[in-house]
Image: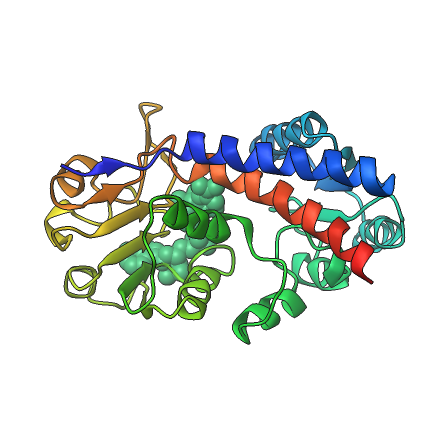
Amino acid sequence: MATLIDGKAIAAKVRAEVAAGVAEMKAKHGLVPGLAVMRIGEDPASKIYVTSKRKVAAELGFHALEVHLPEDVSHAVALERLQALNVDPAIHGILVQLPVPKQIDADSLLAALRPEKDADGLNAVNAGLLAQGRETTLPCTPWGVMRMLEEIGFNPMGKRAVVVGRSILVGRPMALMLVNASATVTICHRKSNLPEEVARGELVVVAAGVPELVKGAWIRPGAVVIDVGMNRLADGKLVGDVEFAAAAERASAITPVPGGVGPMTIAMLMKNALQNAQRTLRR
Ligand code: NAD
């Protein structure tokens, strides 16, 4: 039976580190790191996510700001507001909450974000630096997975890692972080032979957004299984992308859903915002 990887506890540890870093920055440099979250429109899930990001940021000592723009705001006005945050010296991290309304071009908005203020690593310059294996701001969810692996003492070096999903948000940067950590990485998508590929993984990270896509019987005995998926079923139950109970029979360690990767994402966002502020002191 697999060990459960406690995302809540690891995230709490990361938040405590960030709070200590923020306090130190205030005491030594008189600098309060600032995080701004831009929310456009009335997507109900985005409202919940942004409220909780702002609340956590304030609890950890950040100057926390939400810029909320109306559903029908023009792309030009949204861009103007973003550019104002780009040059605001009190703001060190900026996050544009996705999705945005259809008249807004999310790609060009993210491209306009100054890379050194990018808080979630989705700006193309930062994604490029990650692809080159250089130091940069990392996307929060896969970076959270790397931290979980470190906490359980799993070093990806030389290991066979299988990543299911190739999104810009999770799968792609996850695969690159594992390559940078010297794993041998396979990236799977809709055209892959999943049972065959997953069965090879000493580490399996799944971010597909399909409830229980990865069957327990495919898991290589002793593998570490990280389930990024969060799927709300019709009965209200939250399930991951992995058939949890059967996978837990074969894996050596596994993340639950909820309480696994989920809590890590906000914690790593806070770490990014703090790191951005720390880098301004080095310049
Ligand atoms: P996405 O839809 O952008 O990408 C899904 C990827 O999975 C695609 O690359 C696609 O090729 C692949 N895929 C889909 N169906 C597949 C199949 N049948 N076989 C093989 N590959 C398949 O999704 P995303 O943004 O990467 O998110 C993935 C999941 O992770 C979702 O459930 C999302 O809710 C969750 N998520 C969780 C967090 C968190 O904080 N825990 C953060 C981001 C995303």
